Length: 242
Image 1: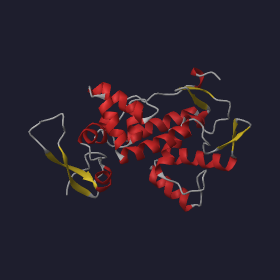
Image 2 (image 1 turned 180 degrees about the vertical axis):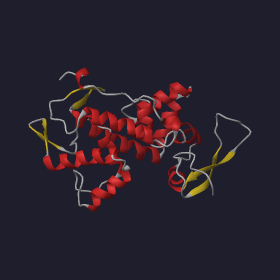
Image 3 (image 1 turned 90 degrees about the vertical axis):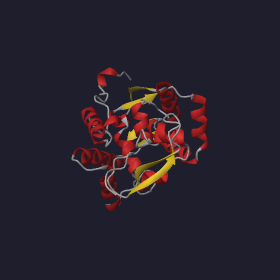
Image 4 (image 1 turned 135 degrees about the vertical axis):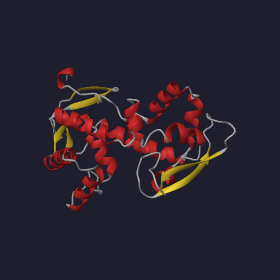
């Protein structure tokens, strides 16, 4: 089967996935066949509205959060409903009822916990203040360096696992963990508070310029052009006060 996955644009393991037609499109069409990779087909929600309005528009929950500048999946869904003129209550009801989206929501909660300093890798809490953990800090620097050298997140995972490094909880590295680290402003000395960002009291592990370059590179590598931001926001340390 030629072509690419219509969700993630991957060229491998393509299948013809049959789904209910988009309920907001031609009402005379009941079923449609969509070319997806096996991974996207396996994770596709059965609900047609969520499939077309959420799943097919975003290659991952992280992409949706970045697109809507949202902290949680529910906040992003509310913004999506406003943008697409959807019934917010109905969309949230459907999302909460799907096991696949509940799993994604759990992943978002873990990411948000990370962003609000639930034991961020590279630091330890000492009397309520983040203190640098040297060995982990070196790994964080390595992750940012490898990414800017052109390595993909999956390759960075392989390298860390091959060399015997483990996460804060002692587990093998996973792609989402690496993506969370690369997207977290905690590493350039900032902290999240009440939905905003302020200057933290901890030492940074990377330069803010390095963090900004990584955000630009992450946008460049998004396969779907319509999901990229032309000008990803750039952080400036002088804009934040402690």
